[in-house]
Structure formats: C-alpha cells, structure tokens
Image (cartoon, rainbow, N blue to C red):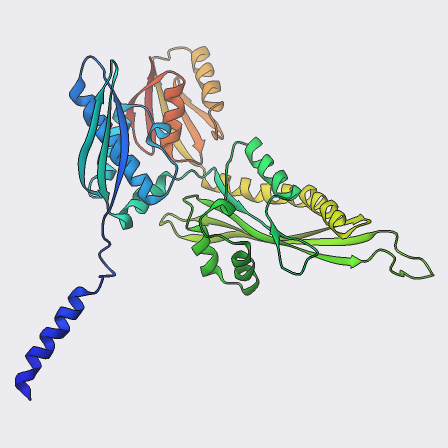
Length: 375
C-alpha cells in the first residue's frame, strides 16, 4: 500500500500543474503605435521616444483607459519621468513590427506584452479627477416589460452642466455588459460590491450611479374629493444615487449619497413623467453638482510653481493671471517674484502640460514643485 503513495502524489502534482494559476496573470500581448519627434537630427532618440510611447499606449490598451501620453505631456523630460520609469516591469517584452521615418518624426508599431495586474496600478494615478462616469437610468411607465431610459431630460441636464464646468463625462451605459437592471438590483439590495464591479470597468476617479423610479400619484379623472375629478395625471419621480470615488489605492468608496423627488402634471402618464423629470433636473442637478464640487475641493493640493526670468512685480502679476486661467487651477498665492503656490485637484502632470501649452519649458518637475521658463 505505501509504495503506491508516491505514484498518487505524482499524479496529483501533474493535475495541479495543468490548472491555471490564480496568482500569476498571463501577460497580454497587444499591438500599439507611437511617434517620436526628431530634434537636431537625433534619430536614435526619436526612435526611443516612439517606442516608449508605443509601450505606454499598450499599457493603456490593456488597462482599458483613454488617458493618452500625448495629452498628458509633450515634453520629453516629463515623458521619461512618466513613461520610462513606470512602464519598466509592466511591459514584460516587446517586438518592433514596423518603423517609418519622415522628415521630422519616427513612427513605430510594436507588439508589447503587458502584465495586466500591474497595468491598472500604473495607469490609475493618471486617471483624471475631472472625468466623471454617469449612469442614472429612469424606469419608464407603461408596458408589460420593465424598461429603462438613460437619455432623459435629467441625464441631459446633468451631463451638460458637467461639461460646461469643464468635466469630462463618460457614459457608463455605453460600457460592455452594463445593464440598467443590474444597477437597479444592486441599488435596491444595497449590493455595493456589485456597484463597484460595474464602476471598475471605467478608469475614472468619480462615478455617479443611481436610478429614477416613477409612480402615478393621481390618475386623470380620479375623484379627489368634493365631487371634483382630477383633470391631469400626476406622476412623481424619485431619484436615488451614490457618488463613488477612488482612494489612493484605487479602491472605490462612497463619498456622498442622496435622494430627491419631483412631480409633474399632464394628460398622459408618459407626458407627466417627462414633466416630472424636467422638474427633477432643476431641483437635483444643483445639489449633485455641489457635492461633486466639494469633492474637487477636497482633492486639491498645493503645488509650488517657479517661473524663471521674472524680475518685476508687473510680470509676476501677468504670470499669476496666466496660471489662474489654466483649467482646474483653484487659488494662486504669491510666494515671491515668479514664485506661486497653486491649488490644483488633478495630477500635477496636467498642470505641467498646461504650462507647456502656454509656451513654457519644464526645467524641473515633481509632484510637489514645478520649475519652468518661457521659451
């Protein structure tokens, strides 16, 4: 009997060896392109930059986000800081598929193998705080089947308000496999794990998710007392929502929750619901925006910005006005000639990119301090 144990153990080992390992995720290999600008006829450096951009594009593709390296920063020094250092270890291997040289640039296409578990961690800190995922479907009245509509006047009013204030709005309904019924069930049952599962499909730091439920309060022709019949149908819509945010580790948590309701009158129930949704948007959108604005204020941190070459108070005042006009810059405090303390809720890379777009050259960069000079 004992002499059969090694054979049994060997068979068990072989079986286990064929099972997928839950700890080690297999690298995902994708094709991606990149471009590097040729400066001072330095083709090798442009090729390295193009490959770095292609690697970063591959990481983004695996992570499933839309934050492009070109929109983050155009300066090669910052490019090295963000891409060369962070991609190391995430891209396990790469193979050059195609290279094309033009008069002023080098374009490449590579096949890069990316560790998916690390790709999300690398890209997550670059997700825009000002990007908001919105999914608030409204159940429609009438019909035998339960139907939801995510393009109501309430949704349009909320999305337009966010866009006017500079937010990037992403529609959760356009995502893969996201159904209003799943959101409705998760909200009704208080299943926060299911909500997080839905929201994790998007690399946004702010997620507004909820539902709108209608109810007929009074039917047209219904006796309301004293022999008076109701001339209209009254529909009441009730909004329940949660505002989710990512912490420093990429985990989602609830930062705000609430409920609002409004009523509408019209001859037909569907028309009354449309009126109620319009009234709901006028009531609830300012409340939701106040909560989102508060979140942006809570995220803001101070960044030291030094602009070389400023010798007079007049030039310092002009530079201060320039900083104040950069998107999402809050307060700008003077700390000396050409020295400022800037309140900014986004990743400092976006502030650096805003300075580059206004004609400044990055001399030194860190998350706490940026030093520039005008080109």
